[in-house]
Length: 139
Image (cartoon, rainbow, N blue to C red; front, side, top):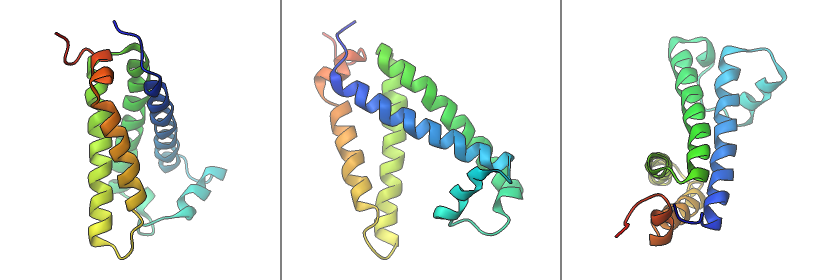
């Protein structure tokens, strides 16, 4: 196994924060009435009653599962596991596609910063030295 590139730790920290946020948001769907409800007031684009609807419950399960996957991905990032590279790359790509859709279909450029940041992470993850750490492109 190769020495872990320094940027992988930074990616791991970002993914860990995203995982914690996903878990918190997912849990707030199942446990309403806590101080964490303020999260739903920050930028809530969901309709009233979403959290108690079947769609909201399914969304909550999805977000909690995503958070758990990302937590395990952090461990894999630090250990250089091959599957982690794919998981993190796919999550970043999906996020980037969402940002592009946001820029194209919404008025304003709120997703541009997301596109730039996600692009930087994807470019970093596809560098030969980083891919080599995850067992990609070894000769």
